[in-house]
Image 1: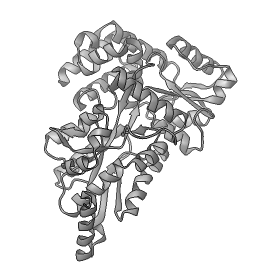
Image 2: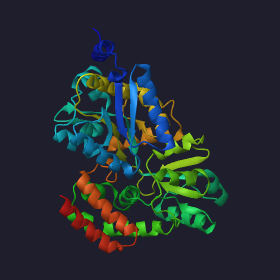
Image 3: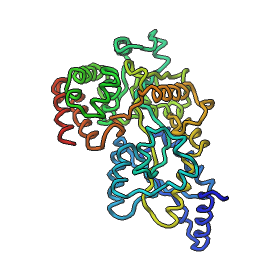
Length: 416
């Protein structure tokens, strides 16, 4: 029996021949992968689809950790002209599915057994009411530190294993004239750092209570105050020009030997790879001290919006390409993330990739795998944005730690 994809691809080809319009096989993709490493990773998918006879209409929207892209998406959908596929995260997928805006991918998913190879934590976002509505590209974990190996060696710094040794390492770098912590002053970047800091302060039980269950005692309690105090400490290690800096420019500071550390998700590794550097040699990776044994994650997925005719057929081609083992390996090696499929060997991955895959499996098995608050996998976008406002206001000196914790409680209550 011919596969569903083969039959549909043949139908698309027949349509294109009959209408003589090359655009019939185009895939219009809305995304925010615009940095060097991200663009290199995306080209893997573009080339894969090209080999299958599909054109690519690129619709990049830079900035905002995806929030700007979601604004553009809303305008497109409101105008009745949705893209073929949209890069999307977490609860945003669920929100669009509730609106009835997403296509049903069940036939393809069942044919290719997605339910047996995609972890249940990801399926919670890929499906809605038991229907597949998105194809997961990867799993990013967010609680990473990226380090410049040369600076570590020069200053005699060993990999920090505690918050105290982490701070001591940054103090040594600052004293030596380096930027201790490369950072970009954008709300989502500050939330990314806070995600890991909070996990390090209170551990999994606290993280779940605060960011997933939205327990007021956890949100406004002593551990949350301590998390904000730690953010104040980190603020002292950031350079003066951090405001508004894009995350990849902060990564470049580590790559170029200007900065010792960056706290950022593993998409940062794509920038090191794109710069020709090798994990374990020019740069190192380790979990934010205190968060060891846990993994906070997000997963880039391509949500498929309801379209008609040949565009719907092209969606299936794209979804199939995204879920192929070959693509999952090729893409994630370049992107810095790990595959969304659990049946893939780590043989072709570098040291950080192997570590990430092993730690992800361990965290999933131990119940210590948590959707990232900062990246839309712990709660809804309205809650996420309310937390962003408080976290970034505190980081920029508008609140002290105790006030920030109290404001967090109020902001979440208003956003519910």
